[in-house]
Length: 190
Figure 1: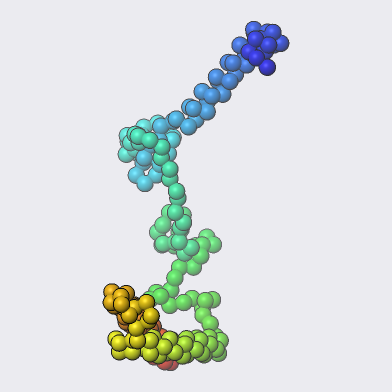
Figure 2 (figure 1 turned 135 degrees about the vertical axis):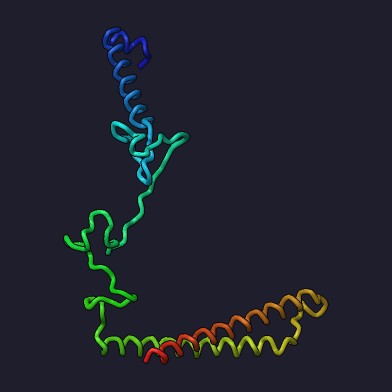
């Protein structure tokens, strides 16, 4: 429908009212989004109160501002706002020296089962890592692996493959050493 048809249908007064309403809505939306943002310490607000300067607030200038609020720790710190010494149903504070609270502790039998399962998994991984290491060492052949067909005339390609095999051996040795250290930690914890 064209503008002239709308004018005939609604009349000039009706169209003027519609235009005024559209402009009013657009202005209201722009005003809601375009209000000043104030920074008062670490708080950002669009309503700083009657005397922003007295609160140490200053108006933010520039483009759009997006604030993403972080999460708060579950226990909260003693003396934090809203936490009167941990009372009032707040989560219990962590025990000193990283110790677990009685509710978080595990029964000794259950802990032994967990340790045994961890040891079994680590020993299985150690066997696999040692097999990979043995294969990598066999492929490397002390830095003199047999040349492949495409490497007989291409020395840089052979050198690159030898370097890759050496890296594989070093990585496999590091994996075995790390798993052995982890098993040692399990043994040291007993």
